[in-house]
Image 1 (spheres, rainbow, N blue to C red):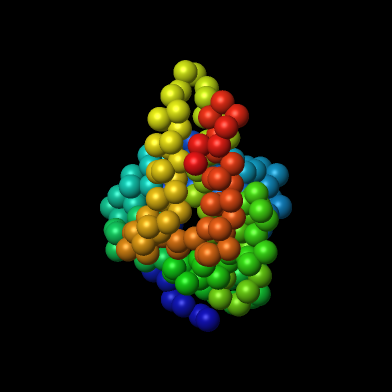
Image 2: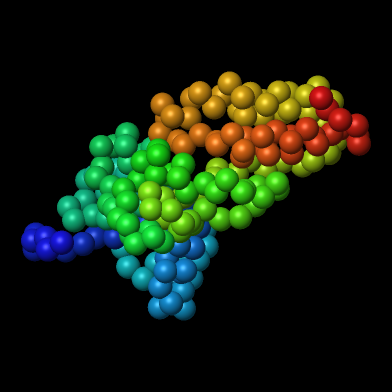
Length: 202
């Protein structure tokens, strides 16, 4: 569509600190544009060719909000909480889709691998938003390291078990997609492998 835009310079706001959000965003850009891939590439901290740096998602939201003509990237929840406008991006199917809980959930494949690795960027589907990722929780399978007690290992198990269970009810109010049932079950199966000195924690 033809849109008459204001005669206002665009100001790019980017993360100044190392960031998983930057890693996801630049990985998408590198796959979408060869010039970007060659000159900037992808990573949690890249040499931005232009723009103003901000720290953290909250800092990004504040900088975008207070800067005339600003454009930036951040976790969806921060954009919603700051009442920022979100743009529609063309997805793999050619449809222009705005970010939302449903468009994020549409990007999660039903055939996610058992180890939960892989990317959710530019997934097929007419309603899929093209920039989506899991939030990863990384921990040692055997918790008996650096003098950790079995009680601490049990506490870790209980916390993650809650996150994958009752804690999922908090995802939607906080503007996160929550885990589809298949992904949740795969994560629980991995959690059951948690051990302490080679013995199951559960």
